[in-house]
Length: 279
Length: 264
Ligand SMILES: Nc1ncnc2c1ncn2[C@@H]1O[C@H](COP(=O)(O)OP(=O)(O)O)[C@@H](O)[C@H]1O
Ligand SMILES: [Mg+2]
Image (cartoon, rainbow over all chains, first blue to last red; front, side, top):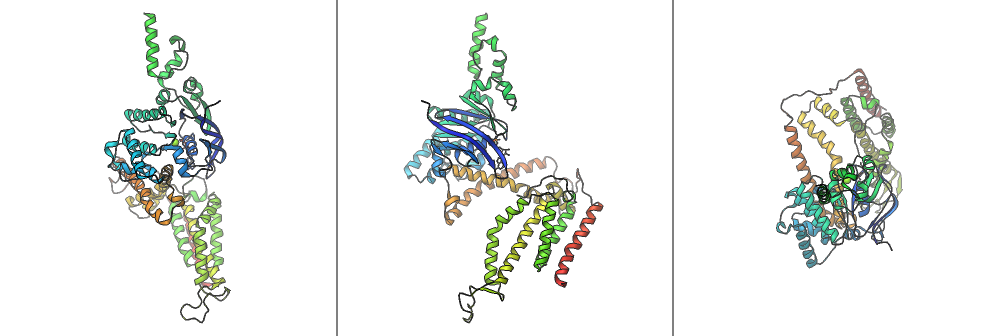
């Protein structure tokens, strides 16, 4: 028995009004509980694909099933509790006067009872560590905190699948890791996570599987180690694996590796063992 | 949208000042012309210009679809109010009733006048791409400032033109973000709800615009914007014989049509 599917994209083709085909015949199955990374050059179609999954845009050809429902047949409100998405540009997602109102915006639209909204807001703000700045005007926060407010406002919808569209672009090192750590925690708590990013080191560190898009088509799809183990393929779309992986790929036999080197911790361990043996 | 695209055509290569002057002349003449045949001639000429400039006629169809509501409104209003002798539908209130007599009467003349006014609007809208889509914005700025408008002012105008498509993209993003949080007032809300929802749409737009303007200001200052009263241009524009010929023929033809309209 295969695991239950969170997302099932079948032969998806999407053409923007004005006749630009951004995605061509995409197939993608995401199982519940996966942490999928999507990478590719700007304009490859990453955002278009995830917009399709959220139901914001409907397939031109093919279909997208989310938790068993066809996105063509499900309304906005129903979709929003299945899939949440942190969009690419943080500043176009903040429209309330206070952090609290911002996070409450979604649950209010769902017409939830007041106590339920209050408890969701509290929980979401605690999750991202912003419970002390409820009354601040969101746009006046730092970039890292603005991103956290948006994440909290998505969490308050309690969606099963959470998509992050380039959450780390323009964030500093600490901001990146804080954001991706929230994603990891959510994944460990059972949410299916899909993350688009240009930070290959983060992909190697956090994602169990990677989808590589190139000019609207799937170039590669597989476990992170496998994808980063084929630098020649990745070079076709100008992607270079993280430095630690490149080192591993080059010193494969010297280090006695049995798979692609993805994490710094793992690299340390391998090298330490090697050095010990030889001295 | 009206966005510049490159092509090597007569209209693309004209001096932008010529295009602006002829655009202005035709725009004025449309409102002076009362004869449908002459308006028709202008419309045909316009379609030919679109072909010459390689503009997709599909766009004109899009404007037409977009303005359909306005046209229907105009035609209905004129049909009811314009008056005329060819009565198609008898009045709801009989003619002999004082003051409100004749209300609800629909005349052929009214409908035709509604169509005529709609055609004026369509022509006016279809004129803009002939300048906007064939002239890079920086050339437009240069032309405006060479026609005597202060450089700062022309910079403001052209920057605004440049930013419109950007704002449209941002507006779409904001609405997407709202939909993702189950907000559907703009899809199925009532009018009052929509009115109340607008601030949430405008706030991020304005804040984004102010952020951008501030950054732009710093970048411009740091590159000496406005340091001198006059400035030079990397690519100047100059009227050549071709420009003069088009300007003279275009002006005479346009003014001629207006004259014919009144003399005929
Ligand atoms: N609203 C739109 N209308 C027309 N084309 C679009 C629109 N949005 C995106 N595109 C085009 O679709 C392609 C894929 O865009 P996108 O999915 O945003 O790429 P990515 O997120 O991988 O950078 C790009 O070439 C982009 O120009
Ligand atoms: Mg994108």
